[in-house]
Amino acid sequence: METIQEQEQEQSTAMPRIGDEAPKFKAVTTQGDINFLDDYAGKWVILFSHPADFTPVCTSEFITFAHLENKFEKANCKLVGLSIDGLYSHIAWLRTIKEKIEFNGMKNVEVKFPLIEDITMEVAKKYGMVQPNESKTQAVRAVFFIDPNGIVRAIIYYPLSLGRNFDEIYRALLAMQTADAFDVATPADWNPGDDVIVSPAGSCGVAEERMTSTDELDCKDWFFCTKKLDKDEVLSTILKK
Ligand code: BEZ
Image 1 (tube, helix red, strand yellow):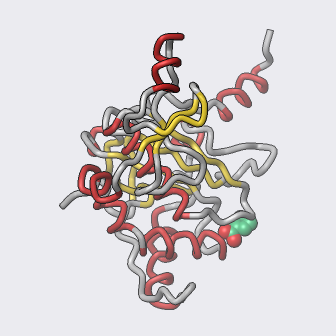
Image 2 (image 1 turned 45 degrees about the vertical axis):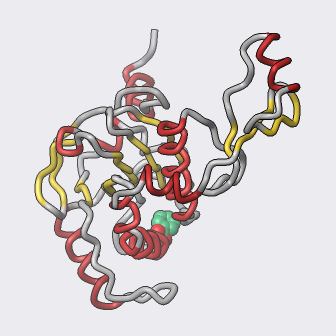
Image 3 (image 1 turned 30 degrees about the vertical axis):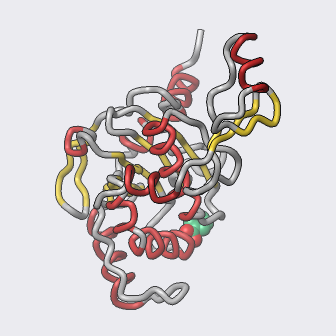
């Protein structure tokens, strides 16, 4: 039998996994109240947590993410942030970022996406953003990619001390959208314009065909075939005009 403490610990570290429906919740944010996920029907959403307002790594991340917001918008993706701080702290921090902080040549950056106040840790616990052996009071740097059907498609976690790579977050989003649109997979370090992977042969006959045909496929071996996918075709399919 689990003790109450063990049950509480388990609940606070439970998290949705890849392929699960993303948990829904209502929250107060710097852009007003939101009804997550109903407000985002038909869109990709990146829900991400950071440890605390008025901290340097988080500040560098918010400036970078806010700077890229239009790129994510073009990819039909909304950004939603969260930390275990109150609304007035969020507002004061975002005002300070805009008025005073320059990072990597980016300045006067206005954070227009919603930042959830989660002082009760209700949402952070629902999404397994509190990892007690890292911090019992702050969320780690979690990134949940949620698709237009409300399904969790990818999750990335970083510790408190490590600022995220937002180019990788954008690359991962485009790669998943490309996989969906063209029914392909994407190899290591893929970027639009690079060759994509076609699904492995599912029978001996197809394996033989792959190795002998001279069509559009480039097969390194029967299980590892790639094909060209034009960058413009990818971008014109997945990005808004
Ligand atoms: C930061 O954002 O700078 C930070 C937050 C929590 C722990 C360590 C660093």
